Amino acid sequence: MALYKVEICGVNTAKLPLLTNAEKDELFKKIHMGDNEARETFIKGNLRLVLSIIQRFSNSNENVDDLFQVGCIGLIKAIDNFDVTLGLRFSTYAVPMIIGEIRRYLRDNNSIRVSRSIRDTAYKALYLKEQMTKKNLREPTIEELAKELEMRKEDIVFALDAIQGPVSLYEPVYNDGGDAIFVMDQVSDKKSKEENWVEEISLKDAMDKLSEREYHIVKLRFFDGKTQMEVADEIDISQAQVSRLEKSALKSMKKYLS
Image (cartoon, rainbow, N blue to C red; front, side, top):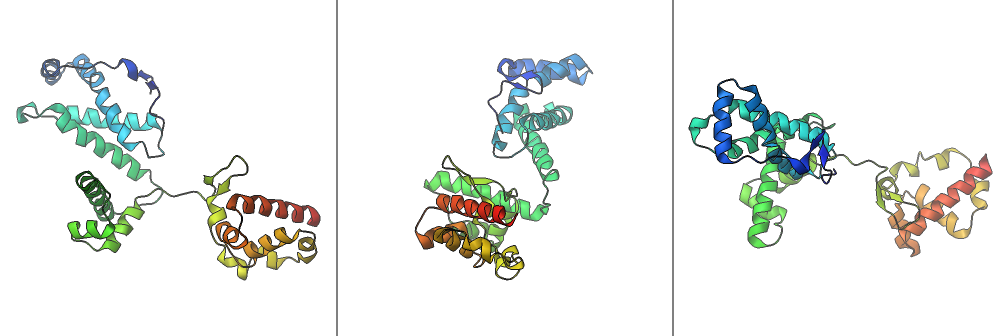
């Protein structure tokens, strides 16, 4: 998510106004009297707060404009529900409102539904992890988190995994300037031992046209169901080389069969 952009949703973030506490108090008096112009001024004067909060979600894949709009909704809700008699600073009240609105948006737009209890466990673990890291100057182990939270370590691992976004099989994991290696290249094909297309079609003649190394790679990958990393370790070359040789071999075989 690019947060370096100056303009978000048509708003120039480099020129956002900043209100003093006295100005906020005065505007709130007018807002409670139904002054819409004062309300708009107060909203604009707190957009920096929204901008700072959405940076916490920089690891999400959501569009920064969408998150900014959702954050503004949280800001408006905070303005409409803020009670000046409580003696709180507006930002103290608004921050959790804005964060909550963004989290609900991310949860509702997540393709995988995660129960509230699992999410709560994950958030507790993440918060504790951050606190323990700051205190001990190192990341805590799962066992340490489980002990502090009085939970089973299996439940914590499951909760943390559950809130992670799905990964595409076609997401590149390595690129040395040549052909990229994708997630699917690192996944062992267990079906290949019985159902793979190599066994369904007679490819003996096509494979006989390959070099000895290409033949070996194709056999390991599509008959033995090994990952590219496993093949690389076995024949003592890099995974990038395995990827290129594999693609070259399959291209040759496809050309021969066509």
